[in-house]
Length: 261
Image (cartoon, rainbow, N blue to C red; front, top):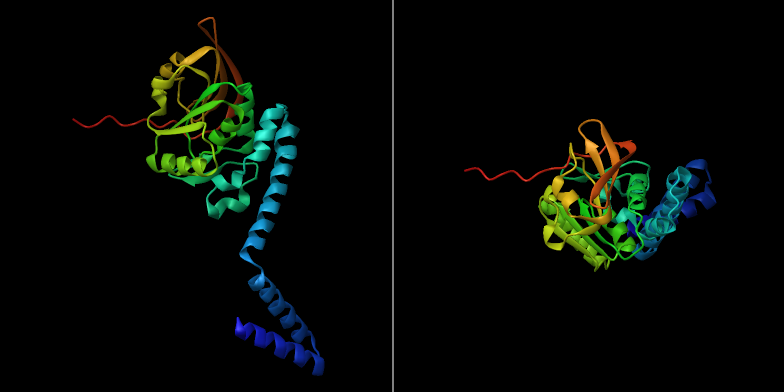
């Protein structure tokens, strides 16, 4: 730092006597470096947060509202939850792009529009008990935590489950409970659920999830192998009503391997 300051002073003096384009250019570069060095970390962080806030607002307008997301509560939840906190540092600058991002362990954080769409399909009022299969980064769980009374989320990869649990606790989501386990089996101890959301694709809808869906409840789930369809499943008078929403692409729903004899 002392070398930078001395160099800057010498360049200023040399410019006053000799002038020249090179001296002006070097003065500009050293001045810029000094500004960056002397800017407090808190100020730089505040600047980054302001930029992320602006990107989040633009995302809501251009990616969500422009594509038909209308639920006011969903839009408010997406505006409140800082997606960049759920993205690995190396991808944080891409947090509000119109695409999924890797989060490690071969898993992804879903495209913002898909998160909003699946949340809207649950038609939540704030009093529901929700089950999420595939916690991943914890971002979808945080959105649900803003929209529902209770959220139970299951992640099959222990590392991701613990990481998401820690972040959600740090952010104050006391109504979100995280468990490491096989999401295909649901969470029977706390069933039934008013809504179930699955963020990985099985080849067929798991029977345990249908059994744990409350009367009048909604299940939002991508189904298929390479080609997948996002489906809305409703339980009406004990019968299952299924609707196709849109073609999608999710990572496969993983299962726990049976122990070897």
